[in-house]
Length: 85
Image (tube, one colour):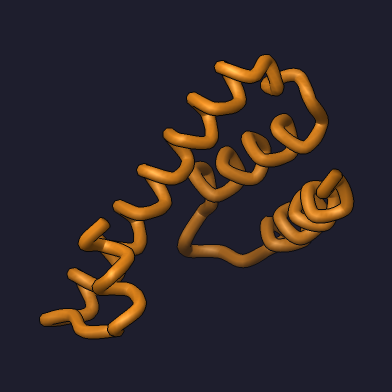
């Protein structure tokens, strides 16, 4: 994947392109995760529910305020990381 090569090399024409590339990689990986979870009947597993919750928190983040939003994100991330098996 060209985006991964760019991320590894760190060569971007500007910051907007760098961040866009990161977003592109995340979208592709999240889509792959969803497809694999559906294919393997894992969407009801707690780790996958935590994963979707984290994505949701990211998607609804108020970028003008940091009040208490990061605490929920940190807690959800800890829950996700704890369920690695």
